[in-house]
Length: 232
Image (cartoon, rainbow, N blue to C red):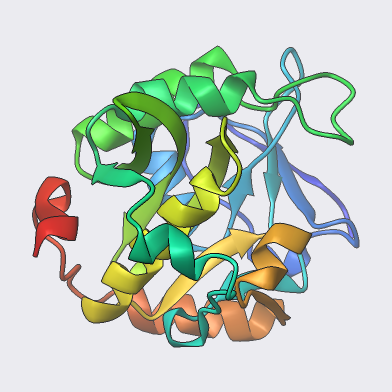
C-alpha cells in the first residue's frame, strides 16, 4: 500500500483501510484541532519522532479494552480497599502530558514521541473539552496519570506515566470503572502492551474497530463535567 501525503491546508484523510502493513496511513498535515478530531473519529492517530514529518497511523489489529471486560488483579485490590492513592480528572492536563513526555520507554531510541507541538495541540483540545487527563496523587504529589480524547462514547487513550508502582494502573482502572457506569462502549489503546493485556485489553480487526467508531462516536457523550466525574 502507498503512504499518502497530506495537504497542510485541506483537512482530509484517505480511508484507514489503505494503511500499509505497518499501520502507517499518511504523512504530513498539521495538528490542528479539526484535523485531530477528524483523525480520531476515523480511527487514525499521530505518532512520530521529534523533527520528523507527522505520521498518521491506523494499525490492524487494533488494541482496545471494552469497559465491561476490565480485569482487576488480586494484587491491585488492596490499593483500592486501602485507598492508597487519590485520583482526580482534568485537574492539571498539561502537567500530565509533560510527565508522559519525559517518560523514556524501551524501543524509542529518539526518546519521547510527544513533541512540544503535540503538548500544545492536545492542551488546546483539553481547553475545548475534547481531551482529558487522569491524575493520581500520593501525599499531595502527582505520582501517575494518563490522558486521552473522548468522542461520543469512545475514549481514545494516548499515554500514561507512573512514578510509583501501580499508580498509572490505579488511575486507569478508576477511569474505566467510571466510564463503564456512564455507558462508554470502548477504550482505544492503539497498540498492545503487557500492561494493558493484564487489564483485559485485546486486539480486534481494524474493520471491527471502525464499525464501533461509526456507531459510538456519533452518540452524545454522557459525561458533561469531567472534573466531578469520580465524585458522582
